[in-house]
Amino acid sequence: MVALVGVLLPLLAMALEEPRERHRAGGVFTSEDAGRDAYQQIAWGLVPEEVRGVVATGRGLVRQSWVIPPSDDPAIAGLGPTYNRPSCLSCHARNGRGEPPATAEEPMRSMLVRLSVPGRDEHGGPLPEPVYGDQLNEFGIPGVPGEGEAWLDWQTHIERLADGTEVELRKPLVRFRKLAFGDLHRQVMTSVRVATPLFGLGLLEAVPESEILAIAEEQRRAGQGVSGTPNRVWDRARGETVPGRFGWKANQPNLRQQIAAALAGDMNITSNLFPAHDCPPAQTACRAVAGDHPEVSEEALEAMTLYHHFLAVPARRDTDEPQVIEGERLFAGAGCASCHRPVLRTGPFLENSGPQSPALAGQTIHPYTDLLLHDMGEGLADGRPDYEAGGRQWRTPPLWGLGLLERVNGHGTLLHDGRARTPLEAILWHGGEASAAREAVRRMSAEEREMLLAFLQSL
Image (cartoon, rainbow, N blue to C red; front, side, top):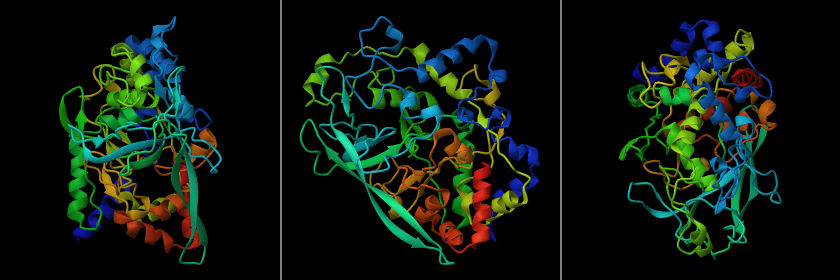
């Protein structure tokens, strides 16, 4: 009986909801825009009058191409000394998802490579590669060499479903060239990551820690082999270890630190949270021009955070279509809803959001995630630990907005490295705790798979 809880509760939650509520993926933060700008809608009606200008400023900073200091406009100066891209939208195009290069001849444009070596830093996080740091930065400002280039080769194989349908799966193999400071450490661990969508993050920050931990306990007690765990990461502002919830391995505790970390890692822009440039000792030219002052003010970081708080979630579509309804039932019945939770609720008041974002509280949302880490098997493993996340563990990615991905970003690639070109490919890569769900989908008839995919397309 207990073993059925993980399936029955999501089904019950969905059954009790009115169709209109399932349509409103982000609660009151739901946008009806289903076009190319679906991921960029601001819930202006919920923005307090006194912070409207701040939210608009944050939007401008997210869209801004940052420049090399010094500049006539110090508010947008700070790019480098080494960096990956000059703006947030270089990777998060239209606030959406990045994609890998399609061939071995194309460079990475909206993804990055994490680097580390065995061991932990002083706060339990990954130990950076001693010469290149924790992220490969391919570009440098004038007088500073970029660190090198990363390219992908694709390895493919065929998976056969129960009805004989063949599906080609692909896996990226990273290689490096033009490394400016010699070979990488002989024990280097690498992980390629595509950029994730920006919308709905304020709502995910608003989900209480107690609800996330309760889901983990529910999964454990169900005894179905699905047992999510929270990551435990360093909160730089609070100076303590707390649960993580943002990033592919839930390695950031809150939205403000997630944004500051992206500024530091992708553009080498300093802030009060990340006050030093990433210039390892061997990179003398980088160190020679690196300053110690924060290049992003507290006001700018707050503006960018508020902008993310008020980004709306696209509404679900076709929720009353019989094919979609049956697909949702198949999704839950296969066990997918154990981790991709259809319903979460935000807290009574937001400790992390501050008084500027009261509307985020008390919302029923449909992100299809539990914000927990799960062992996804050897097929998806990057072998690189990140705080308490192991080399086979990934945070359950939210599925809301999935059906609009190709319309917004012009591609449909999924998973942390973009290897999956369709939702079915993504499902077939699931292993570890998700093996039973994958096999349930593998056994489905062609008609059932079409209904399942129709449901995913409605998100």
